[in-house]
Image 1 (tube, rainbow over the protein chains, first blue to last red):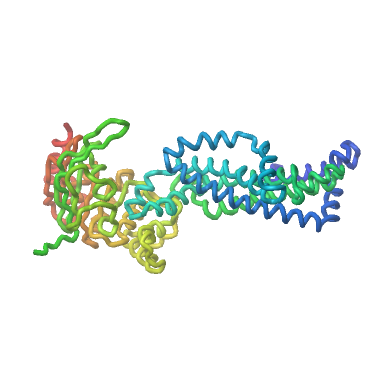
Image 2 (tube, rainbow over the protein chains, first blue to last red):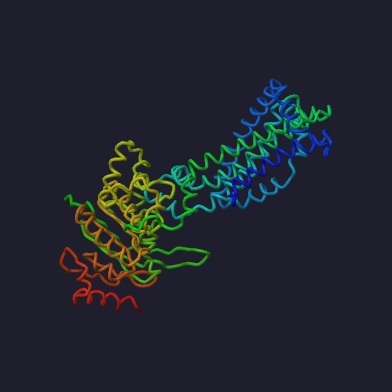
Amino acid sequence: MRLDATTVRRLLIVLLIVAWEVLPQAGLVPRLFLPPVSATVAALWGSAPEYAYHLWVTLQEVAISMLFACVGGVAAGLVIGNSVRLRQLLLPLASAGFAIPLVILYPLFTAWFGIGPESKIVFASVYGFLPTLLGTAAGVQTIDRHLVTVARSLGASRFQQITRVFLPAAIPTVLSSLRIGGALVIVGVTVAEMLTSTAGIGFLISRYRTLLDSPHVFAAILLVLAMAIAFDWLVQLIERRVAGWQRAIRTEQAPAAAYS
Amino acid sequence: MNKDVSGTIQVEGVSHTFVSNGEKTHALDNVSFEVPKNRFVSIVGPSGCGKSSLLMMLAGLQTPDEGRIICEGKKITRPDPQRIGVVFQEASLFPWLTAEKNVEFPLSLRGVKPAVRHDRAREALALVGLEGFGSRYPHELSGGMKQRVSIARGLVQDPPILMMDEPFAALDEQTRTVMGDELLRIWEQTRKTILFVTHSLGEAVYLADQVLVMSARPGRIIDRIDVDLPRPRRFEMMSTQPFMELRERIWRQIRH
């Protein structure tokens, strides 16, 4: 029997979950390191209202940071990608900024913005902003300039050239940078919560860890995972909707019709 | 006196030099010609004879250093697709738009209402023989069909003049011949003034009333040849004596 990749992938995930349950149950891994999946789910279920509250806090922070990082990153990327001057001036800075482990600056952010949601939002926004900007700026440069000339000849104003040609042409690259930027926003928010905070999923992880309550820690980790997967799934959905043309070009290079 | 200037182009003493990578290129040297209304004029010349520069100016995308280009009595200073429809070489359709949306594009730039836009695009697509293909994306169309869409887009605002930049250059011979006849049919039907740039001598003669021959850089008009072959043109004409004589006359001038 031959199995296709999807089936194998699903089997692997099932296997992983089974191992997660069996290994600690059989005593092969200490329960403190890895509580069985059943205990984790029970912890999640047992403290559902608490998790719900903190998840809500985190989601709000993620949503606002996402807005700043993505809108700001895409806008800045478009502007910088379009101008040779700005590109030469700012892109090296942005790349360098991206290489710095920003998390070392987080204590400063708490000093400036407090330990409430504001510091998380600022931190995660900056964290997700840079890769979105870099990806968008790179994407803009791969756009076929001829199409811009065509649009100009058809009467497009400078503004219309950006909204009607640059943006749609850049969407595929923008979306893939959003995917990275958005994932980093989720990382940024949870890490910031783990470091210093009073609410949020990251806060729960950090608090339950100090209590050595592994099932509750893993339950919170599960939620972060779910959040990341949901986000990725959402971007893919958008990608299929608005960038289907590019996918289609990539997969079927040969023209479909022989009619002339 | 009010002369009827609709559908006319006058190119008057146009010279142009462009600089790229610090190197000056004298692209056009004192180019002058006139295109009367409803005429089909081809421009041929060796590659790098400044045809593209000339086209960019006619499309209003560049301003000449010297001289001026007048379209319907008005100097061209910026793109005016309602006056001059432009059809480029292949790959000038927006890949993220369907054929119909591509044709609607210039209308939507001007804020024409969707319902009107839709009707006009359908008419234009029908004119170029693409009825029922409006919802296809460019990558789902053959090379010839893509150029039909480009022509429809150039015609959708019903401009009196259509300017075409080697529109069939990327097509195979057979498709190219079919498209030439299609273009003539469209021209008969719409009576546009057509300015057709090509590097195929046969195509230039076959389609046009007049062929302008340009020299190598700096581009000058070195000959104006009236094509007095009867219309409608037929494929068989290409092997007749008068046709071949015209072709040869052009060839003699541009080969050296």
